Image 1 (tube, rainbow, N blue to C red):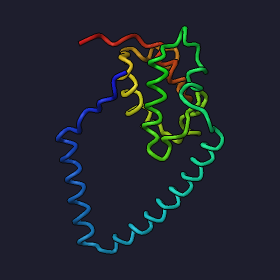
Image 2 (cartoon, rainbow, N blue to C red; image 1 turned 30 degrees about the horizontal axis):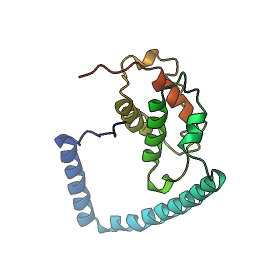
Image 3 (cartoon, helix red, strand yellow; image 1 turned 90 degrees about the vertical axis):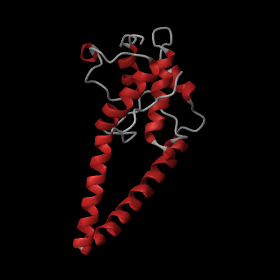
Length: 169
């Protein structure tokens, strides 16, 4: 299965990043009291990271010995494409990041509640990556019976399983 190759950031996006950085530099130079905001954000980030580590440890203990094989067994591989199963599993883990690398995903994991993904992560990162890796088209995805019903990893597999192959270029 081919790896996901993200498209590079366009020049316009780099210009926006530059303008925001220049604006922040001006703000901190003109109003140095804004620099006090950084320690507050650092404290919030530290607390969030601590809670996330605890949550990952709980997931690891609960799912000890599970793997992608257990995830795949949750599907009827006679009717569900195994490439779709693999791509969904791997792309969810990639999106979760390094802290969650060893946490096995279950088919019935709620993407938002259990795995803390948000709609934008799913819509902007996960969907495109899975479509590219599986060679599935996103044309007319609104006609798919799973459209608008993506809550679990299983739902994501079934969405892509119902999509046609993308035209070859």
